[in-house]
Length: 248
Image 1 (tube, rainbow, N blue to C red):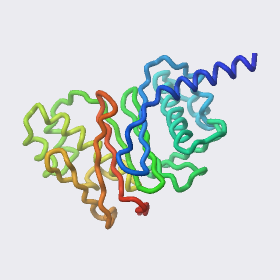
Image 2: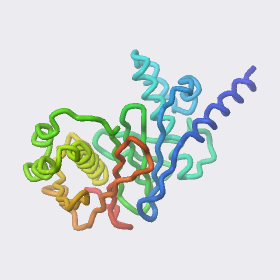
Image 3: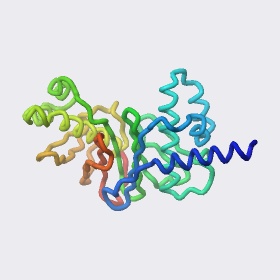
Image 4: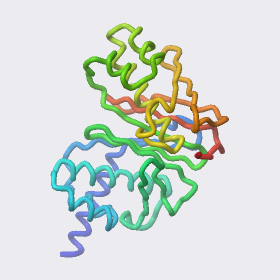
């Protein structure tokens, strides 16, 4: 029976691995992947890929949907890192550390910078050994009162940039700017609690330029790229030039 259970587990994780979609690299040395939960995977099968600590945390989550989302995300993150590193050991032995307002890291590859994000039933991941990277995803959806939200969360110049667009374009512009800022904060090693306006963006059309202000100011040129490999989602990657991995 033990052998049978192991075969089932491996089959389930193999199917999960096959469901991961890989993007064309936005720049040399960067890996990007995504997955969407179609609810065909059994949470108990996916849990076997998690570490002891993650399984313990999952078991403490009372809400079944929240628990599933947590297990699904963590299993995906391990599959992603396993593939990037060509990790040959068991998935539950692959260490991935999550810290508040710091990038996640893998002790097995300390030079690998990681970034993760999720929206709804979908999750994305980004990694590089040669660049500072950040990624963010939002499901493409209708947003009420786009102008008011832009004025609340963005700088006056950024809000004006959005509200001056035709109404049909404002929703997408808001989500692209939001994901750009979140990805930028992750790339410089900070979280959203640092404030979206720690990053000031300018735009010509939909091409953003980053100005990192105050204590985040760095003498480097950041690139912001919107990926299109994931239907119905806005996926944004922010990265530094190669070999510029200093995080303040």
